[in-house]
Image 1 (cartoon, rainbow, N blue to C red):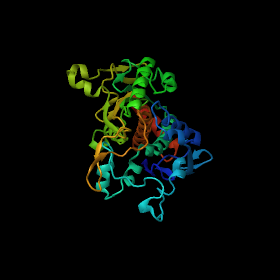
Image 2 (tube, rainbow, N blue to C red):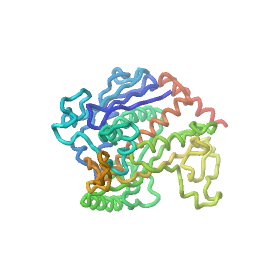
Image 3 (cartoon, rainbow, N blue to C red):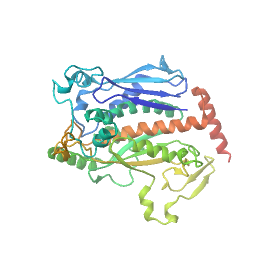
Image 4 (tube, one colour):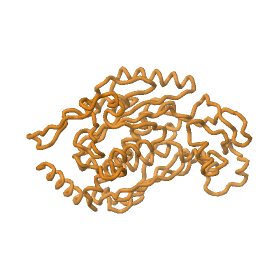
Length: 391
């Protein structure tokens, strides 16, 4: 079984990721992970933190000479900004820390839309920094590192994943854009957007929001190609692949909604238009659908078509023109705390979602096919494909 954990604070020494259950014999090198870490840091509208950090991973265990061993893989990403926060974030007691000698160590004004208020109440923390350091989206760097390991496994099974931005600030790309056909354009875009005209308008909106001290959200889409029917299960709610994917994407900071395929749009369609007719392709010896409103998912299982997921990211709640809040010490009305932040991070969120989806799909594949080595997994996977090709 594939399982993973992350640890670390935004301004702590490092971010940590541990993943267990990766089969032995998978080629994995630092470059495979760093490529995705660099992509997460890109995107027009990012803040000053991205000019400080240059995320690079160190593989601490589970890999030897570029090949996985089958044992837990431990990854670490050093926070370069830690040098500026050694006293404020020191794990050891610091003399006089109650009256911080360098800057504002303690925060008492929760930011609307963040974990600040609920987290400080839940964990009985008078200093909100003890909450925001972990709830920060900086933690997604570790998720991306772990997801890139899962992505390597999917590559070996010829399963591909792409993501792209389809809306920012109410501006949408043209309908019908297939990111598989526009991978180069997405890769070269400052917003990971395949529609150059829409991208230009989005950038203008981001610039306007920056001048106003405001932020913008948007929508991104992911597509997974190469999944055969039957990954996931209908027999229990927690085994449904669509439910697992929705949970993983909803776990990304600032994501407020997920849809599969046509999602909310099918609410306005009759059943005859909402569902996808089935045919048999004798050339490829496979069942196919003549449309893909279901987004590659039926009954909690992959159905052989492209898996299509979309997610909504709200505007980042850290504002340079803060909203009204309360000083938790005396309950007086104040402006919320302002922390260094992005204006728009929708492109970065699409990269994080790609990592989360890779992890969930890799876990589902290993659950179904098993295998302590890549050779065993690939043999089991090939045998399953052979079985369904003669049904």
